Length: 176
Image (cartoon, rainbow, N blue to C red; front, side):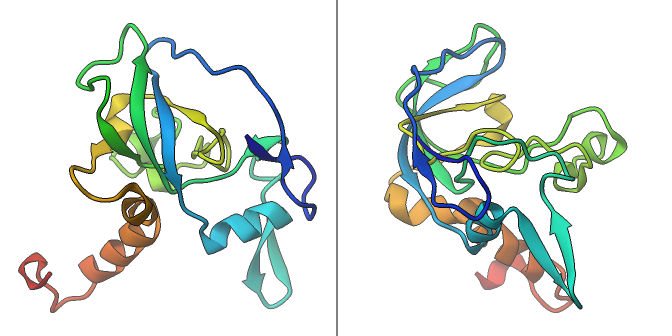
């Protein structure tokens, strides 16, 4: 796995045993992991908010070392005993924006607004590794015949673009 151990320094190749899924967790063999511009900011440890202001990821709860990578495609190789609705061998996109599950935003289905994020590749280990754990099957989406390297960016870049399009008053899903 390639981990961020010190902000502002290159990722470090570390060895670790293959994780074993528990509860509702799903273990993916990583097939593709995108490199998003956000990963560069994550490696720095902060986001530039403009006007000389910075958002510190350590202050938001990012703990090091962490395996980066939030645009991931993997093949299901193991599931925890409580994981339902996913099958071994399925090729899945891992939705990275994972919330705490209990706050108001999470209960409204807006985990991307959670103040206690557990996002893959930011606040929990992501896909710059051979294997990664996804906490629940609800964060997995089958990719069908899409090539993994083309589908991986959809987890962030694709969702960001789609979210922006949904806010345009004249856009209709039939226009895709």
